[in-house]
Length: 100
View (cartoon, rainbow, N blue to C red):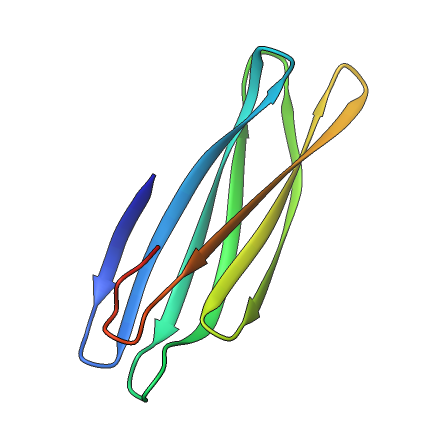
């Protein structure tokens, strides 16, 4: 799910959430946040962060983010029954401030 957070004349920000499963068991949800500069001819990713919440015995370990071009990407790491699961999320922006 995508959620716009803010918008000014030069900046747009938002978030995207996704779920991670171990088999059919939901073990966590992560949300990626991104901020984009849309003052130029193309959007540019400025900043990103990621957070996570464990479910059904799963625990959120850590997350990493990277900004490249018009995309913020993030990886969230979860543990469940001694196994590590990763969830990758990306959030991009068009030059007119549309998030996808």
